[in-house]
Image (tube, rainbow, N blue to C red; front, side, top):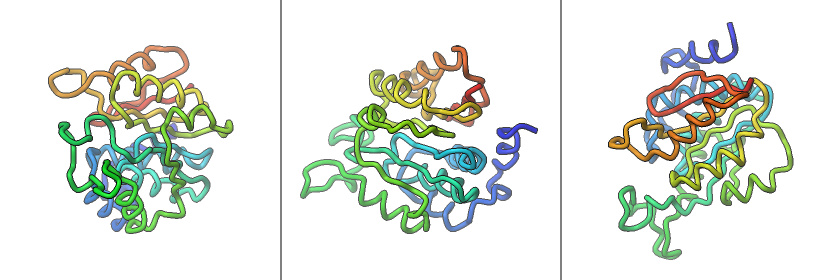
Length: 224
């Protein structure tokens, strides 16, 4: 049985081995990740992180971070890099569709998710398994020192140029047998933006990647 097949045997939360306390923290954290998507990330990280670190683009308030970091803790080998500028995406700004007034910092006069993110990690007991990097994905990808990655989860800005920059910056850094996961894939424009879906489909059809599965709006590819 392959590694990803072993990982996906554990998608049932009751069998996944994810500590109940961490799971509860993840479920109550602000965010847009479905539980079954989170369990998929946990299972993949629990398999992949034995070989190299994992990295996520777009941490927001830490929901996906907890699932991924809990998976990294299973192997005890490599941590999760969590990359986010913590100022919210375009659609999360005041007046936009996904703006949350609770995340607007009146002192800074802008959206700020870093405080809630750190609180989520602390409550989940996963601070030692996450390396937060507060910057843009593009800037970090340009300066990345060359360390290989076993899993990259992309859930940053959903504008066409943002998604493409994230994919171009991070997909080449995934090792053979590693995973590229992308969130918010909607084939139907009436259900959501198209940029992540289009980018995922371009990679899926290219050489060097094997399609693994879709879990709701989470798409998963494996580097050959």
